[in-house]
Length: 293
Image (tube, rainbow, N blue to C red; front, side, top):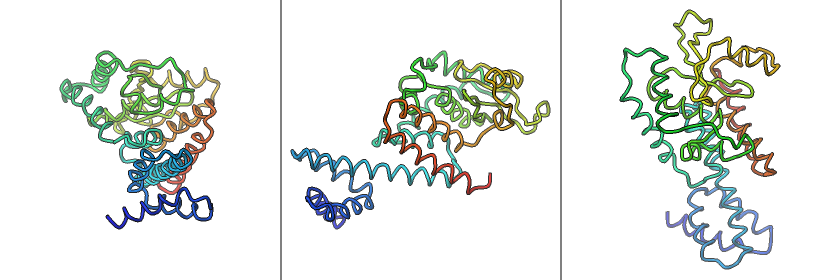
């Protein structure tokens, strides 16, 4: 560890070299070293009065942090998006590099524990959903945001958990994760111009796809039937495609979250951040393409 620390310190000292041919391999090596380099770079930034060096350090730290998010997102995708909320956490980490998953996990777990106390095996699926609705929307005041889809903050899961305000996709991800931890078969539905959940039971014979009902977290957990979802598509003048009304994978849900964030960044003229979201989308799409679902 001391050897790595010594190497990083030596590399940091070369960051202010005026020769680009010297600096470039230094930046590449620091990026390769990753997380261990960040703390020493931050310490150098704090003790330096050279604004030019500080700017270079900021760029290197940003490059390292983006590389870490890319790698973690690829690992998550390769594991078939095993935990929905972790995918949302990684997207938030692109903006909040110091964000720890435990902080997000603890908030979700606290909500789950409260709801679990009110559940029992005798309750129907609709009754269980109504209990979740009561705790999330009445007790904890989760609600739709009036700020609209052009606000990047509304796509960051930590911000939504802290403020209790979100968009269809971010509210749905929180709801679905809590339901999964309660052993309820609630799945995301990638509905255009909206984002829903459905209660899915393959043994349910009254629906060809095993969907018992839909849930709309953006309207405080309103329960919907298939005809209402179909009517929504007709009102939006959209083709009624089978994929619009079916459960989607965790990866597809996080793709939708990332697409929304990319749009919000573009609308806010944050072009570099929008471009990074496109990179993350390509990682997930490639992973989805490579895997058999």
